[in-house]
Image (cartoon, rainbow, N blue to C red; front, top):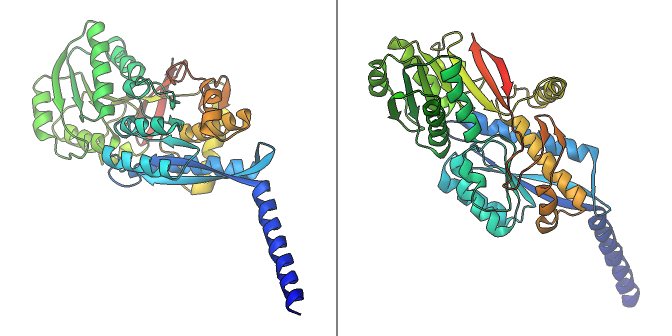
Length: 383
Protein backbone atom coordinates (compact mmCIF):
# COMPACT_ATOMS: atom_id res chain seq x y z
CA UNK A 1 0.00 0.00 0.00
CA UNK A 2 2.78 2.44 0.92
CA UNK A 3 4.59 1.61 -2.32
CA UNK A 4 1.40 2.36 -4.32
CA UNK A 5 0.93 5.72 -2.60
CA UNK A 6 4.55 6.59 -3.19
CA UNK A 7 4.26 5.68 -6.86
CA UNK A 8 1.06 7.74 -7.19
CA UNK A 9 2.70 10.75 -5.53
CA UNK A 10 5.66 10.47 -7.86
CA UNK A 11 3.32 10.49 -10.86
CA UNK A 12 1.47 13.57 -9.58
CA UNK A 13 4.74 15.43 -9.01
CA UNK A 14 6.03 14.43 -12.44
CA UNK A 15 2.83 15.62 -14.13
CA UNK A 16 2.96 18.94 -12.24
CA UNK A 17 6.60 19.48 -13.15
CA UNK A 18 5.88 18.64 -16.78
CA UNK A 19 3.02 21.14 -16.85
CA UNK A 20 5.21 23.86 -15.35
CA UNK A 21 7.96 23.08 -17.80
CA UNK A 22 5.53 23.19 -20.71
CA UNK A 23 4.20 26.59 -19.58
CA UNK A 24 7.75 27.91 -19.21
CA UNK A 25 8.55 26.67 -22.71
CA UNK A 26 5.44 28.34 -24.14
CA UNK A 27 5.78 31.77 -22.53
CA UNK A 28 8.81 33.91 -21.83
CA UNK A 29 8.54 37.10 -19.78
CA UNK A 30 10.23 40.25 -21.09
CA UNK A 31 10.60 43.15 -18.68
CA UNK A 32 10.64 46.71 -20.00
CA UNK A 33 11.36 49.48 -17.53
CA UNK A 34 9.86 52.94 -17.72
CA UNK A 35 11.01 55.90 -15.64
CA UNK A 36 9.41 59.34 -15.46
CA UNK A 37 8.29 61.93 -12.90
CA UNK A 38 4.91 60.59 -11.80
CA UNK A 39 5.10 62.78 -8.69
CA UNK A 40 6.12 66.42 -8.34
CA UNK A 41 5.60 69.53 -10.45
CA UNK A 42 5.39 67.78 -13.83
CA UNK A 43 3.67 64.56 -12.74
CA UNK A 44 1.04 65.18 -15.45
CA UNK A 45 3.76 64.74 -18.08
CA UNK A 46 5.31 61.74 -16.32
CA UNK A 47 1.95 59.97 -16.18
CA UNK A 48 1.38 60.80 -19.86
CA UNK A 49 4.65 59.02 -20.63
CA UNK A 50 3.77 56.01 -18.53
CA UNK A 51 0.40 55.69 -20.27
CA UNK A 52 2.20 55.66 -23.63
CA UNK A 53 4.30 52.71 -22.45
CA UNK A 54 1.28 50.85 -21.07
CA UNK A 55 -0.67 51.26 -24.29
CA UNK A 56 2.22 49.93 -26.37
CA UNK A 57 2.73 46.91 -24.13
CA UNK A 58 -0.98 46.07 -23.90
CA UNK A 59 -1.29 46.17 -27.68
CA UNK A 60 1.84 44.06 -28.21
CA UNK A 61 0.59 41.44 -25.75
CA UNK A 62 -2.82 41.41 -27.41
CA UNK A 63 -1.27 40.85 -30.86
CA UNK A 64 1.17 38.25 -29.55
CA UNK A 65 4.95 38.54 -29.93
CA UNK A 66 7.13 35.55 -30.81
CA UNK A 67 10.84 35.47 -29.98
CA UNK A 68 12.99 32.38 -30.33
CA UNK A 69 9.97 30.43 -31.54
CA UNK A 70 8.10 31.09 -28.30
CA UNK A 71 5.30 33.43 -27.35
CA UNK A 72 6.47 36.15 -24.97
CA UNK A 73 4.63 38.18 -22.36
CA UNK A 74 5.84 41.76 -21.92
CA UNK A 75 5.68 43.33 -18.47
CA UNK A 76 6.10 47.01 -17.60
CA UNK A 77 8.20 47.92 -14.56
CA UNK A 78 7.32 51.58 -13.92
CA UNK A 79 9.42 53.78 -11.63
CA UNK A 80 9.01 57.39 -10.46
CA UNK A 81 12.08 59.65 -10.51
CA UNK A 82 10.16 62.86 -9.55
CA UNK A 83 12.41 64.72 -12.02
CA UNK A 84 15.23 64.46 -9.47
CA UNK A 85 18.68 63.18 -10.59
CA UNK A 86 19.37 61.27 -7.35
CA UNK A 87 15.98 59.58 -7.40
CA UNK A 88 16.53 58.91 -11.10
CA UNK A 89 19.76 57.01 -10.54
CA UNK A 90 18.14 55.03 -7.72
CA UNK A 91 15.28 54.09 -10.04
CA UNK A 92 17.77 53.09 -12.74
CA UNK A 93 19.67 50.83 -10.34
CA UNK A 94 16.39 49.25 -9.24
CA UNK A 95 15.56 48.36 -12.84
CA UNK A 96 19.05 46.98 -13.44
CA UNK A 97 18.72 44.82 -10.31
CA UNK A 98 15.35 43.58 -11.62
CA UNK A 99 17.17 42.48 -14.80
CA UNK A 100 14.99 44.41 -17.21
CA UNK A 101 15.53 43.70 -20.90
CA UNK A 102 15.36 47.37 -21.88
CA UNK A 103 14.37 50.81 -20.59
CA UNK A 104 12.26 53.63 -21.99
CA UNK A 105 13.00 56.90 -20.17
CA UNK A 106 13.75 59.09 -18.47
CA UNK A 107 11.63 62.12 -19.31
CA UNK A 108 14.03 64.86 -18.20
CA UNK A 109 17.56 65.36 -19.48
CA UNK A 110 18.67 65.97 -15.88
CA UNK A 111 17.64 62.44 -14.90
CA UNK A 112 18.34 60.68 -18.21
CA UNK A 113 22.01 61.72 -18.31
CA UNK A 114 23.15 60.35 -14.90
CA UNK A 115 20.95 57.25 -15.28
CA UNK A 116 22.46 56.48 -18.69
CA UNK A 117 25.81 55.45 -17.16
CA UNK A 118 24.07 52.91 -14.92
CA UNK A 119 22.29 51.35 -17.89
CA UNK A 120 25.50 51.47 -19.95
CA UNK A 121 27.49 49.69 -17.24
CA UNK A 122 24.81 46.97 -17.16
CA UNK A 123 24.62 46.73 -20.97
CA UNK A 124 20.91 47.56 -21.00
CA UNK A 125 19.52 49.59 -23.93
CA UNK A 126 17.85 52.88 -22.98
CA UNK A 127 15.65 54.98 -25.27
CA UNK A 128 14.61 58.39 -24.01
CA UNK A 129 11.39 59.72 -25.52
CA UNK A 130 12.04 63.32 -24.50
CA UNK A 131 15.57 64.08 -23.19
CA UNK A 132 16.91 66.73 -25.56
CA UNK A 133 20.21 67.85 -23.97
CA UNK A 134 22.98 66.97 -26.48
CA UNK A 135 25.20 65.48 -23.72
CA UNK A 136 22.81 62.55 -23.30
CA UNK A 137 23.98 60.80 -26.50
CA UNK A 138 27.51 62.23 -26.57
CA UNK A 139 29.05 60.28 -23.70
CA UNK A 140 30.23 57.38 -25.83
CA UNK A 141 27.66 54.91 -24.47
CA UNK A 142 26.49 52.26 -26.96
CA UNK A 143 23.26 51.71 -25.02
CA UNK A 144 21.87 55.25 -25.29
CA UNK A 145 19.22 56.32 -27.83
CA UNK A 146 16.52 58.96 -28.26
CA UNK A 147 13.54 59.36 -30.58
CA UNK A 148 13.38 63.18 -30.59
CA UNK A 149 15.60 65.95 -31.95
CA UNK A 150 18.09 67.46 -29.50
CA UNK A 151 18.48 71.00 -28.13
CA UNK A 152 20.91 72.04 -30.86
CA UNK A 153 18.04 71.65 -33.31
CA UNK A 154 15.30 72.78 -30.91
CA UNK A 155 16.91 75.90 -29.44
CA UNK A 156 18.58 76.79 -32.73
CA UNK A 157 15.31 76.69 -34.67
CA UNK A 158 13.58 78.89 -32.08
CA UNK A 159 16.46 81.37 -32.07
CA UNK A 160 16.34 81.74 -35.83
CA UNK A 161 12.56 82.09 -35.72
CA UNK A 162 12.85 84.88 -33.13
CA UNK A 163 15.19 86.80 -35.42
CA UNK A 164 13.80 86.04 -38.87
CA UNK A 165 10.04 85.77 -38.33
CA UNK A 166 9.35 87.76 -35.17
CA UNK A 167 12.10 90.28 -36.01
CA UNK A 168 13.06 90.48 -32.34
CA UNK A 169 15.34 93.39 -31.48
CA UNK A 170 15.26 93.23 -27.68
CA UNK A 171 15.41 89.62 -26.49
CA UNK A 172 15.39 88.36 -22.89
CA UNK A 173 16.26 84.81 -21.85
CA UNK A 174 15.35 82.94 -18.64
CA UNK A 175 16.22 79.36 -17.77
CA UNK A 176 15.56 77.09 -14.81
CA UNK A 177 19.19 75.82 -14.51
CA UNK A 178 18.17 72.21 -15.20
CA UNK A 179 20.07 70.23 -17.84
CA UNK A 180 17.11 70.68 -20.19
CA UNK A 181 16.30 74.32 -19.48
CA UNK A 182 19.88 75.53 -19.53
CA UNK A 183 20.73 73.48 -22.62
CA UNK A 184 17.85 74.69 -24.78
CA UNK A 185 18.36 78.31 -23.64
CA UNK A 186 22.05 78.22 -24.55
CA UNK A 187 21.29 76.91 -28.03
CA UNK A 188 18.63 79.62 -28.45
CA UNK A 189 21.18 82.31 -27.49
CA UNK A 190 23.76 80.87 -29.91
CA UNK A 191 21.28 81.03 -32.80
CA UNK A 192 20.19 84.58 -31.93
CA UNK A 193 23.84 85.71 -31.80
CA UNK A 194 24.69 83.92 -35.05
CA UNK A 195 21.81 85.76 -36.74
CA UNK A 196 23.21 89.11 -35.61
CA UNK A 197 20.96 89.59 -32.57
CA UNK A 198 21.82 90.36 -28.97
CA UNK A 199 20.34 89.22 -25.65
CA UNK A 200 19.40 92.28 -23.60
CA UNK A 201 18.74 90.38 -20.36
CA UNK A 202 19.81 86.93 -19.12
CA UNK A 203 17.97 85.69 -16.02
CA UNK A 204 17.87 82.46 -14.01
CA UNK A 205 15.33 80.71 -11.80
CA UNK A 206 14.71 77.10 -10.69
CA UNK A 207 12.22 74.42 -11.62
CA UNK A 208 10.08 74.88 -8.47
CA UNK A 209 9.86 78.68 -8.29
CA UNK A 210 6.48 80.47 -8.41
CA UNK A 211 7.44 84.12 -7.82
CA UNK A 212 9.17 85.87 -10.72
CA UNK A 213 8.57 89.51 -9.76
CA UNK A 214 12.24 90.51 -9.51
CA UNK A 215 13.24 88.72 -12.73
CA UNK A 216 10.32 90.11 -14.71
CA UNK A 217 10.80 93.64 -13.36
CA UNK A 218 14.39 93.58 -14.60
CA UNK A 219 13.26 92.24 -17.96
CA UNK A 220 10.49 94.82 -18.33
CA UNK A 221 13.08 97.62 -18.20
CA UNK A 222 14.62 96.28 -21.46
CA UNK A 223 11.25 96.54 -23.28
CA UNK A 224 11.56 93.03 -24.75
CA UNK A 225 10.06 91.94 -28.06
CA UNK A 226 10.72 88.31 -27.09
CA UNK A 227 11.05 86.49 -23.75
CA UNK A 228 12.50 82.98 -24.10
CA UNK A 229 12.10 80.51 -21.24
CA UNK A 230 14.11 77.30 -20.93
CA UNK A 231 12.08 75.07 -18.62
CA UNK A 232 8.78 73.26 -18.13
CA UNK A 233 5.11 74.26 -18.23
CA UNK A 234 4.67 74.14 -14.43
CA UNK A 235 6.98 77.18 -14.17
CA UNK A 236 6.06 78.82 -17.48
CA UNK A 237 2.35 79.02 -16.51
CA UNK A 238 2.79 81.22 -13.40
CA UNK A 239 5.46 83.22 -15.23
CA UNK A 240 3.02 84.08 -18.03
CA UNK A 241 0.37 85.10 -15.50
CA UNK A 242 2.81 87.46 -13.76
CA UNK A 243 4.00 88.88 -17.09
CA UNK A 244 0.43 89.86 -17.87
CA UNK A 245 0.05 91.46 -14.44
CA UNK A 246 3.19 93.53 -15.06
CA UNK A 247 2.06 94.57 -18.54
CA UNK A 248 4.78 92.65 -20.42
CA UNK A 249 3.11 91.77 -23.73
CA UNK A 250 6.13 90.39 -25.60
CA UNK A 251 6.18 87.11 -27.49
CA UNK A 252 6.91 84.19 -25.14
CA UNK A 253 9.02 81.40 -26.60
CA UNK A 254 10.18 78.02 -25.32
CA UNK A 255 10.86 74.40 -26.14
CA UNK A 256 8.72 71.31 -25.82
CA UNK A 257 8.69 71.62 -22.02
CA UNK A 258 6.20 74.50 -22.25
CA UNK A 259 4.46 73.32 -25.42
CA UNK A 260 1.74 71.32 -23.65
CA UNK A 261 -2.03 71.26 -23.50
CA UNK A 262 -1.79 72.08 -19.79
CA UNK A 263 -0.12 75.46 -20.33
CA UNK A 264 -3.36 77.51 -20.60
CA UNK A 265 -4.61 76.07 -17.29
CA UNK A 266 -1.27 76.61 -15.58
CA UNK A 267 -1.20 80.20 -16.85
CA UNK A 268 -4.55 80.84 -15.16
CA UNK A 269 -5.84 83.32 -17.71
CA UNK A 270 -2.43 84.86 -18.33
CA UNK A 271 -2.07 83.48 -21.82
CA UNK A 272 -2.63 86.07 -24.56
CA UNK A 273 -3.83 84.85 -27.97
CA UNK A 274 -0.94 84.20 -30.35
CA UNK A 275 1.63 85.22 -27.73
CA UNK A 276 3.30 81.81 -27.48
CA UNK A 277 5.71 80.34 -29.98
CA UNK A 278 7.00 76.94 -28.85
CA UNK A 279 8.62 73.97 -30.50
CA UNK A 280 7.97 70.31 -29.83
CA UNK A 281 10.73 67.87 -30.68
CA UNK A 282 9.09 65.68 -33.29
CA UNK A 283 6.19 66.14 -35.63
CA UNK A 284 4.23 64.52 -38.43
CA UNK A 285 2.74 65.88 -41.61
CA UNK A 286 0.94 64.63 -44.69
CA UNK A 287 -0.14 61.00 -44.58
CA UNK A 288 1.55 60.45 -41.19
CA UNK A 289 -1.04 62.67 -39.48
CA UNK A 290 -3.68 59.96 -39.79
CA UNK A 291 -1.57 57.52 -37.75
CA UNK A 292 -1.01 60.08 -35.01
CA UNK A 293 -4.71 60.91 -34.82
CA UNK A 294 -5.60 57.21 -34.59
CA UNK A 295 -3.06 56.81 -31.77
CA UNK A 296 -4.60 59.74 -29.87
CA UNK A 297 -8.04 58.19 -30.27
CA UNK A 298 -6.90 54.82 -28.86
CA UNK A 299 -5.08 56.60 -26.03
CA UNK A 300 -8.23 58.56 -25.07
CA UNK A 301 -10.40 55.44 -25.22
CA UNK A 302 -8.05 53.51 -22.92
CA UNK A 303 -7.16 56.15 -20.30
CA UNK A 304 -10.02 58.66 -20.68
CA UNK A 305 -7.53 61.56 -20.97
CA UNK A 306 -5.99 63.33 -23.94
CA UNK A 307 -2.32 62.98 -24.89
CA UNK A 308 -0.40 65.76 -23.15
CA UNK A 309 2.98 65.69 -24.89
CA UNK A 310 5.45 62.82 -25.04
CA UNK A 311 3.19 59.72 -24.87
CA UNK A 312 3.45 59.01 -28.63
CA UNK A 313 7.26 59.00 -28.42
CA UNK A 314 7.19 56.60 -25.47
CA UNK A 315 4.79 54.38 -27.43
CA UNK A 316 7.17 54.32 -30.40
CA UNK A 317 10.22 53.76 -28.19
CA UNK A 318 8.66 50.63 -26.64
CA UNK A 319 7.72 49.29 -30.05
CA UNK A 320 11.19 49.98 -31.47
CA UNK A 321 12.79 48.06 -28.56
CA UNK A 322 10.53 45.07 -29.12
CA UNK A 323 10.96 45.19 -32.91
CA UNK A 324 14.73 44.91 -32.41
CA UNK A 325 14.25 41.93 -30.08
CA UNK A 326 12.04 40.20 -32.66
CA UNK A 327 14.51 40.87 -35.47
CA UNK A 328 17.42 39.62 -33.35
CA UNK A 329 15.25 36.67 -32.24
CA UNK A 330 16.39 37.35 -28.68
CA UNK A 331 15.47 39.60 -25.75
CA UNK A 332 19.02 39.33 -24.41
CA UNK A 333 20.33 42.94 -24.43
CA UNK A 334 23.76 41.85 -25.66
CA UNK A 335 22.16 40.15 -28.68
CA UNK A 336 19.51 42.67 -29.70
CA UNK A 337 21.46 45.88 -28.93
CA UNK A 338 23.44 45.77 -32.24
CA UNK A 339 20.14 45.31 -34.11
CA UNK A 340 18.56 48.23 -32.25
CA UNK A 341 21.49 50.48 -33.16
CA UNK A 342 20.93 49.70 -36.85
CA UNK A 343 17.22 50.59 -36.76
CA UNK A 344 16.27 52.09 -40.12
CA UNK A 345 12.91 53.01 -41.61
CA UNK A 346 10.76 52.05 -38.61
CA UNK A 347 7.29 53.51 -39.25
CA UNK A 348 6.04 54.86 -35.93
CA UNK A 349 3.16 57.12 -34.99
CA UNK A 350 5.70 59.95 -34.58
CA UNK A 351 7.20 59.38 -38.03
CA UNK A 352 10.02 57.28 -39.46
CA UNK A 353 12.67 56.27 -36.92
CA UNK A 354 16.34 55.58 -37.64
CA UNK A 355 19.36 56.11 -35.39
CA UNK A 356 22.74 57.62 -36.20
CA UNK A 357 26.08 56.47 -34.77
CA UNK A 358 25.48 58.37 -31.51
CA UNK A 359 21.97 56.97 -30.97
CA UNK A 360 20.26 60.20 -32.05
CA UNK A 361 17.25 60.08 -34.34
CA UNK A 362 18.16 60.85 -37.94
CA UNK A 363 16.51 63.85 -39.61
CA UNK A 364 14.51 64.65 -36.48
CA UNK A 365 11.50 66.89 -36.99
CA UNK A 366 10.36 69.88 -34.94
CA UNK A 367 6.84 71.26 -34.82
CA UNK A 368 6.25 74.93 -34.10
CA UNK A 369 3.04 75.78 -32.23
CA UNK A 370 1.14 78.76 -30.87
CA UNK A 371 -1.98 78.98 -28.69
CA UNK A 372 -5.30 80.55 -29.57
CA UNK A 373 -7.52 80.56 -26.51
CA UNK A 374 -7.00 77.22 -24.80
CA UNK A 375 -6.19 75.42 -28.04
CA UNK A 376 -2.70 74.63 -29.28
CA UNK A 377 -2.36 75.28 -33.01
CA UNK A 378 0.37 74.07 -35.33
CA UNK A 379 2.42 76.68 -37.19
CA UNK A 380 4.75 74.42 -39.16
CA UNK A 381 6.82 71.22 -39.16
CA UNK A 382 10.52 71.84 -39.81
CA UNK A 383 13.56 69.58 -40.13
